[in-house]
Amino acid sequence: MEAWEKNVRKVVPYTPGEQPNRPGMVKLNTNENPYPPAPGVAEALRAIGADSLRRYPDPSAGALVRALAEHYGVGEDQVFVGVGSDDVLAMSFLTFFQGGKPILFPDITYSFYDVWADLYRIPYECQPLDADFRIRAEDYRKSCGGIVIPNPNAPTGIALGLEELERIIAGNPDVIVIIDEAYVDFGARSVLPLLPKYGNLLVVRTFSKSRSLAGMRIGYAFGSQKLIKYLNDAKYSFNSYTMSAAALAAGTAALEDDAYFQETLQKVIRTRERVKGELRRLGFAFTDSRSNFIFATHPGCPARDLFEALKEADIYVRYFDKPRIDSYLRITVGTDGEMDRLIRFLEQYIGEKL
Ligand SMILES: *Cc1c(COP(=O)(O)O)cnc(C)c1O
Image (tube, rainbow, N blue to C red; front, side, top):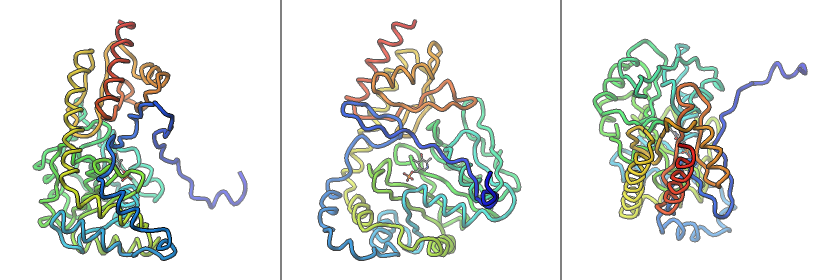
C-alpha cells in the first residue's frame, strides 16, 4: 500500500446489472421499460437544438419541478429532482443521516443502500425479511438514525400496505423515513397522500422504470418544505447543475402525456400477470410482485445454472449470489414477444432437466 492510500475514502462499489447490447438479445436484467418513452419526449429533445447547449441549464430545474408539483398536487417547494433516483437517494443519505445511530433497512433490498451508507460512513442495521420475504413493520420500531423502505421492495416486488407504512413513519417522528417508490406505479399504493401529515417523510421516485427514461437519468422526491430545503442546500453545495437541458425537456414532456403513461403501465402489468401464469404452469414459484419484474424460483433447477443457460441463449435476467435469495431469478417484464421467447426457452430447458 502506498502512503497516500491511507487517506483514500475506500468503498466497495455497487455492481450494476450488465448492460450488453447485441442485436437480437432479450434484456430482462435491469428492470428497464420495454416500451419507448411518450412520443412527446422525442419532439422535446429535437426542439432543444445543439446551439442552446452552450448555456448552463436552469439550476433550479424549474420547468420539471413545476410539472411534477402540478401533476402530483404538491407545492413546488416540496419537490426535489436529481440525476436518477440514485442521485436523489445518495443526496438524501448525505443530508439526513448524520445522527450517529444506525439507519434501518431490510436485509434483502436494493443493494445500493448499504453502499451509500458505507461511502458516507453512516452506520446501518439490516432488518431481516420474514420467511415469506415480507417487511415486518414492527422491526422498524426502535431507536435509530433513519429508515429506508422500498415499496414495492426489490428484488422481491412485494408491496407493503399504506397502514403498515404509516405505522413506520408515525412510529419514528424523530428521524427521516425514506420510502423508495421506484416501482410504485406498477401496482402498489403510494404514501404520497400521507405527505401533509408527516414532516419526516421523503418519497423518492424515478422516471427510469415506469416512464421509460432510464437513459435520461431523472429522479425526484417529495417531502415537507423544510426537508426539501435541506436537500437543495446540500445539492447546491455539491453540484448546482445536476439536471441537463435534455433531462429537463424530456422529463417535462413525459409528464404531459398521462394517457400514454397509463397505457404503457397497463401493458406491463398485463404481461406480468400472463407470464406468472406460464411460470406457474412450468413449476416455478414466485412472490406477489407489484413491480415490473418477477422474482421466481424453481424447485428442480438451481437458479445459477438457469441464469447461465439463459445467458447462453442471449436472454439476460438477474441472479443474486446472496444468502436466502440465491435460488431465485429476477426477471424484468419485457414485451409479450420477449417474454414468449423466455417461456419457450424455459419449456425446453425444464423439459430436458426433469
Ligand atoms: C432502479 C432503482 C432505483 C434507481 O433508479 P434510477 O435509475 O437511479 O432512478 C432506486 N431504487 C430502486 C429500488 C431501484 O430498483
